[in-house]
Image 1 (cartoon, rainbow, N blue to C red):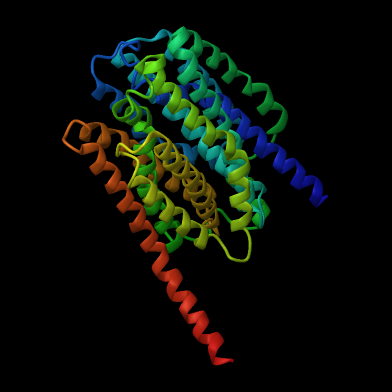
Image 2 (cartoon, rainbow, N blue to C red):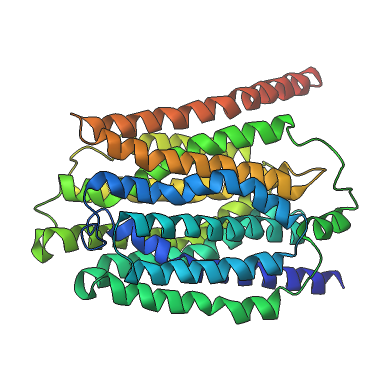
Length: 415
């Protein structure tokens, strides 16, 4: 019976990941092509790109608490079905809508859809995971990243050839394919919190929200998501700015998005394997903190080199390393947020974590596109992000080192 429950739980997690991937196609495409093909969307200037890339996240900030409240009262299945419908509508809208105002509405609606998908995905993992929370969180993250893989490939390769409209319409139709999959695999009609608390034999009213682990992961999630959003929003811009000659064979616009798409696609391709592997490692006796600190150090080192005009091969290696560190960071921090759900409402904890990561991801594009016009503005933005990674590492590293020293001291007393 336990084996059957675990198998069904893993099947539900993979299904929700696939549905999220299909809904994510349009958003991933937009991130890849809009910084270069903004005129085709009817925009007037580059600053509008930064606003649009951040708008969906700013919308989620006030709405995430509402969505968390809804998940405490409605089933995962209902929330996810609504999310798929909204995601498909916005993706189709990218193909037929023009102008800043229209795109702003589309990005706002996508923000609602993503909140329903993301919080629903977190709750699905928490509901079905036991001591393998890192593994299942990594598997979920890896599966939905497949949507980013397809999105960036289409954005980098197909949009320059066929235009934005046909790709967006096809992606919108694919997003709708998630409806029958959800209907077949996510069947529970109880509220998300009721299901989770039933398994843990806890009460939804037990415990307080702002425990020390929750507060720390929420604040650090904001900082890390801000730094990672800077990278995601400026990858094609950095290529276009620093490697004009290298990408000019197929034309500057097509070449920069193609290289950016290929690099991002590589990350999405390894996510299902690397994220699950990292998650399994952090489930082990060493815990998550050593892997978190290594990922933060690697991210800081990579960001310090990305904005400079390195030789193309060396720059690509640095970018791939930064992406691998980002995969590890995302998996570890999501698992740590789930670890913080000890008692009380899982929806409340994961909503707070989602709000913080959304806030950071919303601030990142606006700040960096506001800074790129200044002398060395891009370099300053990336170096600042590197320092933020170091700061998060210090927040988690200091108590970790102190505990290790205390444990070593106790061990030496018995030798």
